[in-house]
Amino acid sequence: MRPRVRHWARRPGRSDNRGVTRTSRDRDDEGRARNARPRDGLGRPLPYGQEGVDRQPEGVVRTPDGTLAEAQRLLDAGMPFHAHEVLEDAWKSGPDEERGLWRGLAQLAVGLTHAARGNAAGGAALLARGAESIAPYEAGRPYAVDIAGLTRWAVALRDELLRDASPVPAAGRAPRLRTE
Image 1 (cartoon, rainbow, N blue to C red):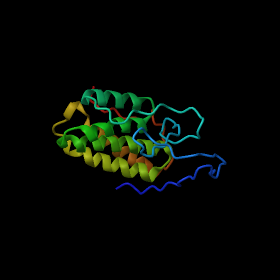
Image 2 (cartoon, one colour):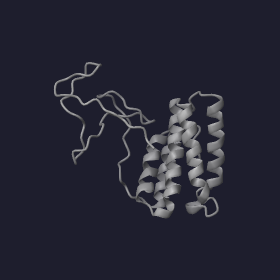
Image 3 (tube, rainbow, N blue to C red):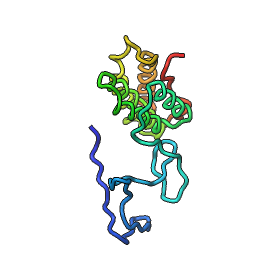
Image 4 (spheres, rainbow, N blue to C red):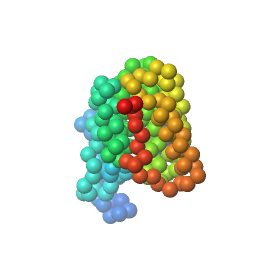
């Protein structure tokens, strides 16, 4: 379950604690509140006006091969938060019998995100949850996903985070999603 996030509703012309004055909340084309702040490669918000990393478009339906290739490209580039968004699209759009696989892969990417940000407890928890979610798929190995290798990677990184809470380099610790 995700923690509840509360946003400070800014009134027109009111400034925040950094002196930034905003007239309204960021909204998407449908009027839903969306944070339009730029983000860094690990998905952390940057101040308005700074150049960030392009976000992954939401709701893109890809083939499983396309999803895994794009997620691997992002992981290798040190952008596990963005890889998580790609995997989350597959989780939300894929067949019911594969949801646990895609959810687990997305959780592994978020676990690496937290580990790279220095959130050892959050990283360890998500790595464990992701490994647990993908474990039932080991026998079938859908789409040549290396379930056993990913599980070993997740457990090793989780154990490392529990011993030493230092941030890890995202690209240097990126897993291989598929067997070669």
